[in-house]
Structure formats: structure tokens, C-alpha cells
Image 1 (cartoon, rainbow, N blue to C red):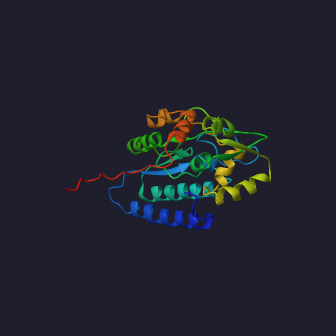
Image 2: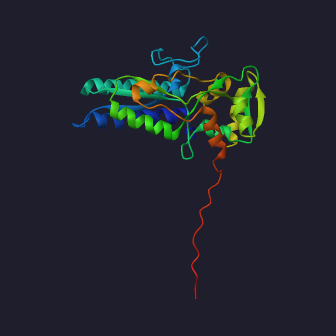
Image 3: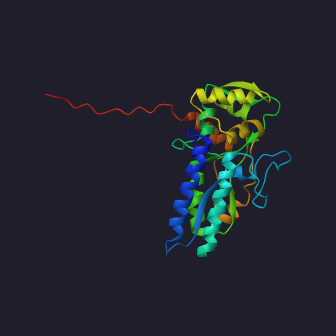
Length: 244
């Protein structure tokens, strides 16, 4: 959730991957493996495809992307060892009212940076659409990756205008300073989130409907609108009992 350092997050991911996949591989009734990956595995290198599909080589350019690529590799190795199919769901950044998301936290700040020179588009996916993809993947038992992204795209500036946030235009080195300030404000900006705002992040999700039988129905713009509609504070009131 971006509140751990990159080193701790990497170690937590390695430990969790080893524990969960190792335990699953020892289960005699195991029929398939579905892992949560992300479109960050494609990377945003110079010359990278703008909208990669599932046949695009994995070439991550962020620490989170590398962690996801290692997770996919570990799952494939376990699947081959026990002879079960492995589905890697490569999700766009997931946003939902109860989903810890560094991108969501950043976009909800009153002042949010965006790339002045490019303002590239990105996509997301709503948490309920992502959940349906997991259920479908478990039923289909595919042995391949599947991109799961919401229809459409949006730029950073467009998202901020929809949320009535104050846009802070940045160029080049200013992003390093913005990342430090964002951390101090309580919304850490890991490198994969900075990539989204600075270089964009899209993927071709057209195969999902055929492969999974379902596809995200909530558009990227609608997911962003929902992000800004969620209350910042949920107050829980206690019933007051009358005392005679």
C-alpha cells in the first residue's frame, strides 16, 4: 500500500509469495492458480508500446513491476511443478472505497501534480470489476496472463478537473521534489505511481471478454468520479440508551 519502504515491500512480497504459493502447491486438491499481477509488468521504457497486450514481453521499469514479474514467475514454476494451469490477472491500478491505493490517495489530495509537457493518459479498474475477473479466472482455469482494464482512459489533468482538485504542473526534475512533498503529506508516491502521472499507463484489455467471459463494465472516467465521491471520513455513531 506504499506505506512500507521499497526494500520492506520487496521482502514482504517475496515472503508472502513463497508462503502462499508453496502452501498451495502442497494441496492435493489444487486445480488451478490465479495470481494478482498488474499491467506494470510491461514497463514504461523509452519506446515501449503505448497499449501492450498479453503477447507483449514483460519488461518492468518500476520496483512494483519487478515484484509482480517475480510473482508471476514463481506462480508459473509452482504450476509446472504440480501440473495445474496458472492465470496471471494483469490489473490496471485498482480503485475502490476499501482498497489501499497509492494512486487513489494521491488523486484525492487537494493539490495534485501532473505532467505539464505530456499529460499522458492512463487507465484504472474498479474493485468490483477486478473481483469478478478473479471469480471468472478461477472458473475458466486458463494457463496464460489476462489484462483487466476499465474501458477508456483519462489524463492526470482531466482526472483532477473532475475531482475539482488544484493541478500542479511539473516538468522533469520537479517530480523528484513532488514525490518527497507527497510523502510528507501522507500520500507516498512510489515509482510506479509517478510513472502513471508522468508517462501514463495503458493496456489492451480487449481479450478479457473472450478469455474470462466477463470484462470490466465501469469506465475509467466513472471510476475516477467514484473515487472523488467516496467520503473522506466515515463517522460511526453509537446508539444512546435512555436511562431512567
